[in-house]
Length: 243
Length: 293
Image (cartoon, rainbow over the protein chains, first blue to last red):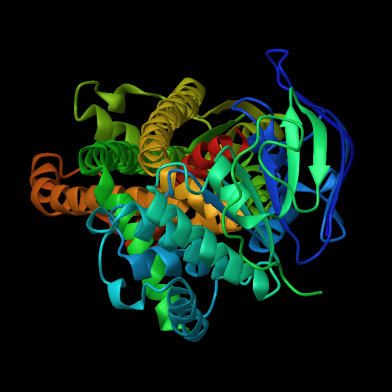
């Protein structure tokens, strides 16, 4: 589903964000990208939805060479890749319903499709009863769930999350991670960039560790801090998706 | 027809338009001034053109036959000229008729009864169909060996044509400058709207909106600025026509102003089109730069 081969990303100021990354993520996977701030997690995600072009290498998403994609084809790619951010990026003057519907309306969806898919997305994230509220009237967790609903309303095959629990308290963090787990169970490939060790250790999924733009570890059922390093106590884990 | 999509699109256009109302009014005002000046210029140019045409139409080529030429020679030349497609009419003025007209013009200032013979030649008065061809026709007539002299107020015709040409060029230059200014103002207005809506644009691009879909509300905003500006200008021009034109016609009855209103419907459409086109072009350029950045 996602493939990076020899990907290097150097910003104009000379910062080497990614260095010769080779990475394969299968369809239906649930993957954590971990590492300290500035190790290239967000940069890697940006390559996947063509917010950034690599300096070298190949990026393939759902059989599409993203690095070679014509500008006019980028919108089509992005309808297939939902993205969620730490700061939610909701429109403050639109209700929950309108924020989610916006993602369909601006892609030219028919009204009847909007009326069918928005309630479905809100139902999935458990916000049907708050559809008329504005973001300022919601908790952090509810705002993030709205953002997730917007990211999913186009039925993307991939969901990218850049520090989705960065602004949330532990209770809301667990809610969001449970939601992302349920989304993954339905078949969506989920990739989460995070430096929240508790979240990673709780779920015991594939963990790809980045340091200075390089992959230094890739464990199928990993911890945030790998074996042999100062460990974290194990927490109850959520069962992985059955094959 | 999916009215929901239409409603959403119109709501986006409305949001753009009302986000930045002061700048919108500035842009509309600039377009109004530009189009009103354009309309005034076209009106003045057409009036001057009609004045010029009127004057030039009255210009006759006076053909004076040589002393050796007989009335039959003059009449033969007249017949030949009548057959020329460039010539509208030819009037034969015999020596006798010429003397009679001279006496009328002089009105007793000179006693012509003292003349022992008629000094005036056989003459023709020629009017051309196209005032621009006066010189050509005069040259043709001059080649006739029986013709002594050809006069047609050359200087006046050339000056009128030159004045008309210069006015046209200057006027076009001024109008082009004004249109450019209006385009800049609209472009800046759109850029401010784009900046104000940058978060929404970023989300639209994130969720996969095509650049056309992102661009269209702003293009419509520019078009509305242009159309409203033109409509206001047309209203002002119409007001001027109703209030000022009768006064001008009364004060300057010899000027052919009243006939300028012919073709008013197409004139209005042309001005509306110019306003809309300026708005669309300015906003297309403005949004395009942002999307490419």
